[in-house]
Amino acid sequence: QVQLAESGGGSVQPGGSLRLSCTGSANTYKSSCMGWVRQAPGKEREAVAVIHPGSSYSYVADSVKGRFTISQENAKTTVYLQMNSLKVEDTAMYYCATQYWEYGGMCPTIPSDYWGQGTQVTVSS
Image 1 (cartoon, one colour):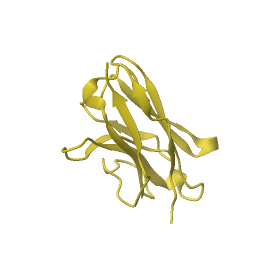
Image 2 (cartoon, one colour):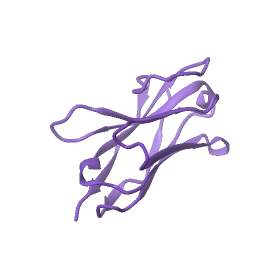
Image 3 (cartoon, helix red, strand yellow):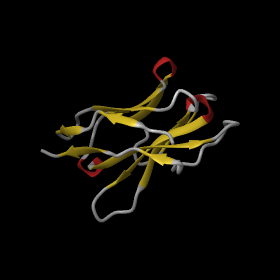
Image 4 (cartoon, one colour):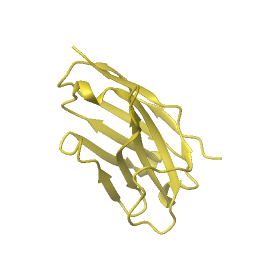
């Protein structure tokens, strides 16, 4: 069982910034894909970004590219989602997700082994 510790959601005005954090298991951190998935009410879940800390492979969805950045801090087994220039349409519950991916390379855009409880991001004026 892998537990993911998420933090960093909140409410901001359009154009603002937030940083989400997700801390994973030290045992599997470098052999796993870790990413963020969001879901807004009435909408399908959407892959946002994913990274493989062991190989530094990363992916960012076109809908947020240029505004969101995913990064890693190995000493803390933590990945971050820096969200800048937030838009109203970014409002959603953001979930950290992980999937064991031993050999690195291209990660699934929606990791499916374990999910965090989610953190709400609300962008409104």
